[in-house]
Length: 568
Image 1 (cartoon, rainbow, N blue to C red):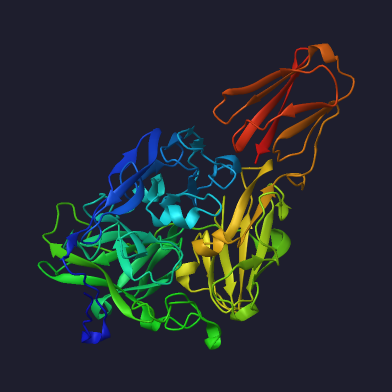
Image 2: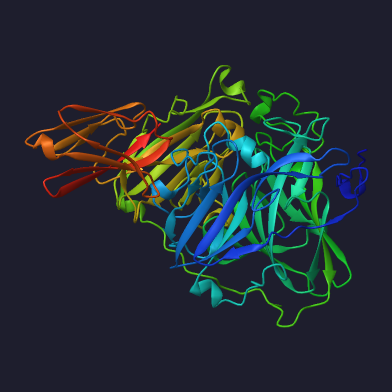
């Protein structure tokens, strides 16, 4: 049964057999060795049959991982599924080979163990699968979790940071279920809300300033966050870290993949309730979640108009205010951190990225969508950026629906949206930006720290159904622009093709053939192949290798040449 409460034109959704449920707070994992098990499970979301799920160290969602800036951390991902997956560290600044992109496939019942140095400033990030064509399904079923990075600057501020007491994760996801209570993927019937995996949640909070780390983990839906009675709140951080000063708001729009840290002052509200809503009735047309998903009334999405959330205001979570804690934070700080942005005058290039629709053109709101007229290919590098360079990207949306645009491996800054300066909520470090329908957004970024001539970073729409359909590209960061399908050249050795499938060719000159050994090791350093070469060009059978990144060692005359190769 579903019914509506029309008071203040606010829509509430209540399911028979369910009263308000205590909000689930994921446990913490911290330290220099983090073990994450991706596994199958089940959950009693609705009355009747349980829902088949996937989770991390549990049946649905995963633990909150706490990292400290400057630490070296071993992240071991155990794939206990019967299908491949990956694990992307969304927002973290890590090398491309450790990013968890579609190139970092974890085969069933194997382990991927990247070691990362935590370079990021204090912020809220998240982790989720990024297997091409399967991202939406695996995230929908529950594989996702929050990452909190702490640093000395943030620790010196008087902010709530007692996890689960005055500092809370809030993962918002809209989901659809079939008649057997099983998840439906890539449908416009996403009318059931899960907050940290909880339906109709209530959270006990103290009568003081609390911190909400809000993640839009939905497949497609945009939320317009606010509180009943227009209760004021303060944004203190965007995707990649703290703002320069708290921003007083009554509304904050969050697209899929975006995060925001909010301070809410509950002083004097003991024994009262305060509801957080999404004010969908205020979303402009052309956004998934508005009354009309296409700008200027163009196009339609099957089943969209029947979804009771679209264009409506609905409750996300109820805050039940209890007694104040000891050492409560009771004042909003006036300043946070200084932010250094890249200098536009140092930009070496302006890249034009065009988002377009296939088939019906602008009236196509369901996809497939294209980037620069192309659908994603694992074998195509769209461009290369130079290490240390500052670039401006102009993202032009030629479709009638807004797209959240995500770039891997770095944080960027939004310089303008539709020719106007972005509002203050979008002036901090970002890795996702909502590009409005029929408008352009300009971004500036600098490629620091990491380069790799073989393994690319991704850029894509973070509406997961669009991403899986091919609305994605990839780029290298390297000192010398190159492509994955270029032969690796060396005065002595050439190894090609790269990426490789079943056969790898090795050519060499001026080498004693009787003393050449080829070794291939996986990302864990395990020896997968060792072969003595008797003639050149030599053909190496790689058909038995699983998809992933490998190191090839060419050993001769007490000398070793090492190269990377991707196995598709």
